[in-house]
Image 1 (tube, rainbow, N blue to C red):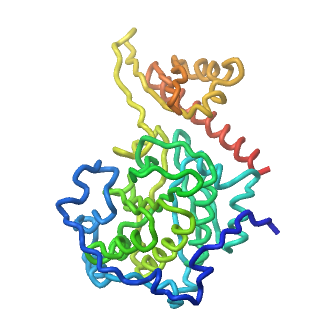
Image 2: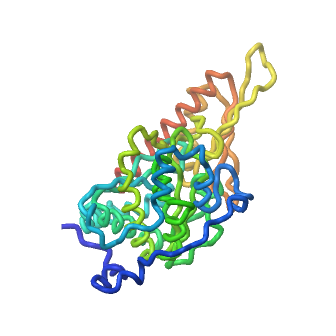
Length: 373
């Protein structure tokens, strides 16, 4: 049996049988004026999640009716849906996923065994920084599993990103070894039941469980999912997710027809704010009756050496086979990417891109196999 790496004793578990009013009292929190919500927020990033209340075009009439009925939070002691199954999708960066998997899968295996959940992380797409962590199980088991994943992140040094959707939405920095962030992907159809009437549910979750909760104003590209960022301590995140699960399960049937977000690399047009920069192609002057184009691709510093190869063997092979000219920018302190500039005929540029992504995928597979062995 896999050895457990987590022995966290959550406060609410230690206080079972105590006065539930201490953590579940209904608050009469005044609603926020719509004129003050999200005034200065980027359209693809966010302000407070209560902004969802005023986005009437983003919430269906059925959801609006449900949210009007939802003014108080479910009780943690309500066992009505205790055995119900829920599935969470969490956006993580490539580097974060390594912490969550652990050496030889030690971390994720321990979490699966201890919480009796199913958990997995999607493969990294060429040119992308994003992966999807999925966790499935009963309401409280999933909350515990996500809290353990949060603990793994809290104990690891994770770099920050300056682009959506990996960019931190909250302006509050995480406290080292104390607080961390989970990026939940929530179908827009369920935002109404999570927000509650006039934002009361969300305000109560933040106030009672001492967490920050912020949502993206718009859908993630190619989907109707929204990013909901939770920030807090492992203990507070555990109880907050238990409550969030009970809110979401009330309206689980609405997720039918959801278009789920799929991370894509630089070679795909993800739309504005989709994450990693999208390569730009520009026409260059005619040379010998041939239309020359130039494309720029960004790759993480940690993978560039593998793309170049020993003594430049791999990149030279790509240049020779494709017929394209490839220049590589110098490594710049403070930046986690380097730019590959590809020039040549349209066919040569596309061939070079295909070869680079092929080499990238091979290297990622090699590293994943080495990690799992």
